[in-house]
Image (tube, rainbow, N blue to C red; front, side, top):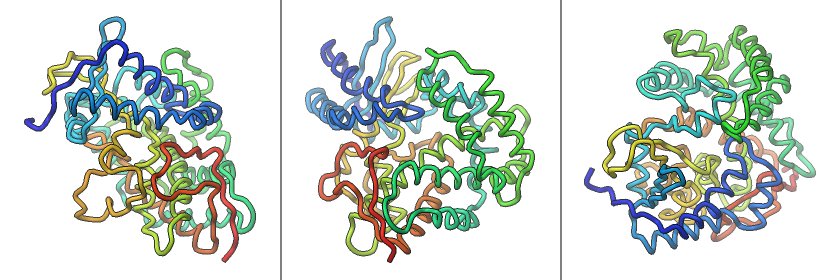
Length: 402
C-alpha cells in the first residue's frame, strides 16, 4: 500500500520513556479488569495526558511514521501514530489480533474466544457465529433496558456501583435471558477470572473457578431463553470445533465495558445544552475515553513495513483517537458522510467489534431512558478541551426527577 509511512527506530532513552509513560500506566490500570486504586493514581498523575503528550513529541521529532522499539531479548514493538497507519495495520490480516500477551490474558476465561483465535479459525468464528448472533436484530432488548433503567434513583445521588450493578442486570438478561437477571455469582466468578487475566501468563489458571463459571454459564445457555442471545446462539449453524458456547464469555466481558462508555456518555450528555444525539454521544465517550487503552496486534507474515515476524503492534487509543479529531466533544464526527477520521473506539478492520451496533443501541436507549424523567448533573465539568481521563469509579451524578 503506497500510503504507509516508514517506521522510525527510537533511541534507548525514548524507549525507556515509552515504557514508563505509556506501557506501565496502561498495564497498571488493568487491561482486562480496571483496578480502582491504579485508575485513581493514573488520574492524579495525569497518566493518559502524559502519554498523549509524549507520543505527540516523538511524532514531531520522528515524523508521521510508526515508532519502532527494540525490547530486551531481541523482540520488537511498533507503535503506529498516523491514522493511515493505524487503519492499515487493523485491516491487514498479516497482523493477527491473537497476540501472544492477549492469548495469555484472555485465555483465563475465554480460551476459545474470537479475539485470541488465528486464521483460518478466526474467519469461521467471526462470520459463522459472532456476526450471525450479535447482528441478529436487537430492538426487542429496549424493554430490558427500560425496565432496568427504572431501578435507578430519581432523586439524590447516582454512583458508579449502583449504575454498574444495573448495567450487569441488562447484560445478563440480554445475553442469557431474564432467568439470569440476578445471577451475581456468575458475574463475580467472571470478575475473579478477569482480575487474574490482568496478569496474563504471570498468574496460573484457576481451573476450579473457570470450571464453576462454565458450569453455571452452560446452565443458562441450555435454557436458551426466548428473546436472548443464548436463544439465537442455540439456533446458529456452526461446526462444533468453532465452540459456540466458548464465545459467550467474551460477549459478557466486552458488554461489561459498555457500562463505562455509557456512564461517561451520561456525563457528556449532561454537559450539553439543547438536544443531544445520544448515539453520537456514546461514540464520543468511547473515542475520548477508550475502554481498550491499547489495541494490540502481532505480525504473523510479511508486511509493508518489513518488520520481523512476531513484532507486537500497539495502537495507543487515547492518542490515536485524539491526535487528529481533537479533544473536544465532536458528535458531528459520527454523522453519515462526515468523512473525517474519528479514531477507533470499536477497533477497525476484520477484527472490529462484532457487537458494536448492539452496544450502541443499548447504551443510547439506556441514556434516553435515564434522561427522560430525570435531570442529571455530573460531579465534573465537561466543557471545552476534555480531560484525557475520566475516572468512572469516582464520577457521580446529582439526580432530580423532572
